[in-house]
Image (cartoon, rainbow, N blue to C red):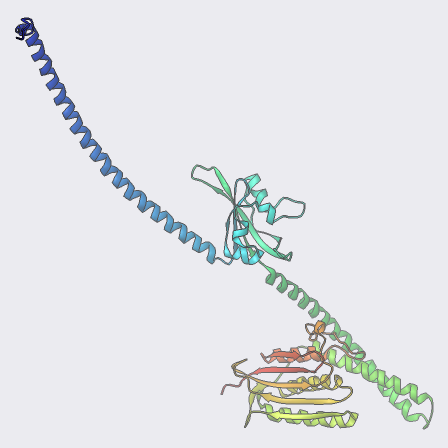
Length: 420
């Protein structure tokens, strides 16, 4: 039989019950406070999530705009004809556009992130871009020489600027440059033109002053030759004097032709008729000199090829080209004069050509054959082809020269086609 402890079944005192009820009431109050705090926290958390979502959307939009702007600026840099090189404060290359690659010969992948000085040294001096970065002062437009990857110097016009953030802190520097090789070449040509103009004025004056005494000397030499008895040994010396005077007179005449301003009377003329007359004269000259040269004519176009030109100037052009061709064939050959149909090569022009099978033109001389006073012949004046070029350009035409080694040369003259 189980015994029951009387202390375990005794009722709880009133004070204890009241204390428990009060504690339970406080617990309920605190629980309600916690519940309300939890609900408020949930509401606040929801608001924070909504705000975060809104900020994320705004951030994505901002990043998209920035990416679009970056792409836009990159496209501008890549489409520029000026080279652009950017560096950071350590001198490492951060930007290198397409034009910079074309001018310098370096690939962007090979230079980005590397030191500017490693690729673009400036002799013993500090490179201009690094100097601008170090001093914090941009450089206005100036000129310098940049060295390509292959070691070839390139003259450039450039300027530099300092890159800063919104607070004014230096981020790096940028250099913008352009290739001025063509401009420098044109400046050289202009200087050469000025020199030739001054030389032309002087030559014209000198030639005019020399021509009259030469004419008198030739006349007196002719009188002396007439008075000498047949078989007189002095006649040989006199013939050399007359030949020298004749050559001097030819040089002076060509000099006057080249230096004198062109005065021409342009009129409608048939190219076939003009060339036929000149070729007939050239044929007579070949027979007179006893040269073993076959003369060929080739008028490819039926009917008449009309141009607006000065017949005398065109005659001199063809004569000079034919005489050059004859001198290039001392042992004989074929001289061809003809009109070509070349609409694909030069639309709007007519073309006639003078060909020979002579010794050709040395490759080193081809760029100089139209320069005044340049000649490879012992008795040449160096003015024949210069006069040809001057007269052809006066007619708004141009010359094309083709030469294959020592197998002769072809001079093609293009003149504007006459528009009725």
